[in-house]
Image (cartoon, rainbow over all chains, first blue to last red; front, side, top):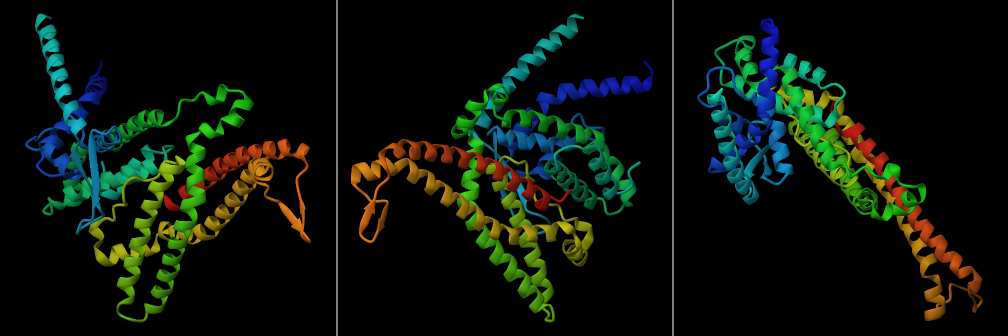
Length: 121
Length: 293
């Protein structure tokens, strides 16, 4: 494999890993907020303190936000803003909090499992 | 290398080609919101230089497009009712229309919502246009036109949400990002000059005659069907005369009564099918006139 192929393969691997992680990260980011946040704020929060290329491309967050809302884990309301178009503010729901708790456990188990397997190798 | 936000959006639009138009509008609004908001935090750099790390974080157009298409395909599958109808017989498809939520949604939209919203939209659009023209010579003319056109965008979004809920046609879920760099006057010119604004106004005006037509057609069809079904009960049970000429009551012959009931039921079923077809057409019209891309 030349460098370009390696790059594509890495990107594909990362993308497949991200499929579920994105939802977990978004849920946890929204749950920690003291007040409802809109898309750009959430993206900023997740990106905070990272200088190099992000694990999750911020552009992929927006569609996931909407899909989380559709499954009832987040709720949103639209508010007018001074500078631009109205913004959609997201807040976590009760069932979102429960899902976050379960998913965090699942993530912990998964990580422990993968780590042990990798160490054995 | 992508040198400007416009170029990024053009490429993103190209990557999303073939997607639902409403998805494209949502994706472009999301991207524009992020890129412009982030650009504003780097006023010291030229747009092309500042954009490079921003796009690195947001994702290249092809990556972002892939994410939207991925989610959208999953959602479409979840939203679509189980696709068993194709295998069902013609008869069960004909009579099963009462169990079809799409038919009920369309009936609700056409019978109740269309006339009601048509009156409001028509009044709003005609008042807005006449006042805009009349006030044009005065100093408050321009702000008034701006507010009116903004309200048209808001109404287009709300109408889209109702259309998606009741008619099952994917419509935009976010307002359109106006583009901050333009300034007030530039934004105003863009709003006035874009086709989308005028198509939305055309839709608002068109909604009243359409709403009246839908209302009349469905009220007449439903009353005819129900009266056919109720005819034997009314005549035999309550002795209500269907026709009186010169004080002489005329009754329906008894042999005809089963037929009026059957005709009534058939008419009711056909009405539901008509609602489905008209609902699809109304959805297509809304999509053609209210979606920008």
